[in-house]
Image 1 (cartoon, rainbow, N blue to C red):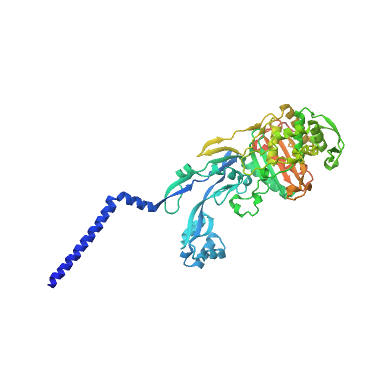
Image 2: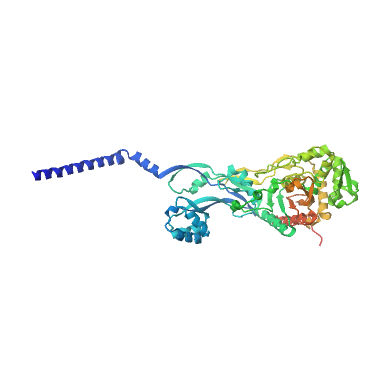
Length: 568
């Protein structure tokens, strides 16, 4: 009986075993054969996710001796972060990180002693060398993640016109801000494995943003920035800008500001005014540089010739106000050429009085001084000059020699280009091409906003007058033997409002400037040098000297042939 019960138990166990095995086998057949595709897709779905990602941002390039060079691009760096809960020896880990990442130990300990946090950033932009050393150390709870950042290989070179990309990936200021939508990579829905994702090279080309090619020349830009730094050291300037343009095309070759920054480290800047591009975001009064504008109008309206004379008494009464020459000097009988040559205020007032206020105002408007240049930079401002447009005679009188009329430096450059290029107001531009995957999708062509404001005959006479200024007048410091240069100095008092002081009138500080184009009778370049309160009395001893140095550099750089052989 016992043997029978034992036999029955064994058989029951075997039957249960075979039944259980059959169930498992059936389930495997069901999962792996009958519904293989479904469960394979389900498994893959657990290992892959679909995520929206942006392609790489497009590059910004400029010219270096005719060769395109990258000015702004993308660079992959490592992000080092910690999971404090996984760290076994905080003290030892902090010691290693201190040496590898070059971070203060106290800062590291503060971050690592947070066991309730799973993700703590230790350092952004970790270098390849640092990442390699960290991997070698194999620290528990310390991780690396690769991220893409905007990178500016030349640091502060052209930073004022470039702008930067913020932590959210948005372009701010300058070209980065103006063309943010074009530069930003395309959105892509990518299936990717769990973990860190990187585009393949082919995917980068497919989804990357467009590239922007600037008109800026690297070496002229660098020379301009260095000259401003030199002026700060030698002339103690408080600010300043230099603009170099092609007067016949509107291309901006250099746009430099004394106050600049490194866009790679923009987050370290506390004073946001540093990001301001003074060439398009600040107003100034051009002073005597405006006198050629007045003379051009008078010549065009046949109110004067270069030899027209008037008698200067040292002052002139207009609208109940007395206007004086510089240092109240009395010049006597002088021609219009001498008015420019010796920068006589009353002579400009005389010419404007012959033109008439209404006609004078119409020309100023046509030259674009009351409107933006629409250059491809974010944040451009302009002035409608409401006080001048009120129509008071004294305001027109002072505007004739550049006081009481305000504009941005670039706006003044555009207006003066019309004196050099045959009378056309051009659209100023800082971009020459837009490219996508190496192919040109847009080429910027010279654009005339208003044409033939002045006749060639009037401008030829004016150019001869401006050459006299440089050859024999107050612009002599800008003279370069062998080359005819048409130019004009400008020294104007800075109004209190421009200094942030809520007070009417003018301070003792000055803007000292020089503008000129060369070769005078076949202009290739136009340069504006504007200096804020240098420790000299007039622009003759400050801006004119800087103009000459930069003009000489450009002549040598482009090997511009001389106009004549200077006497030995």
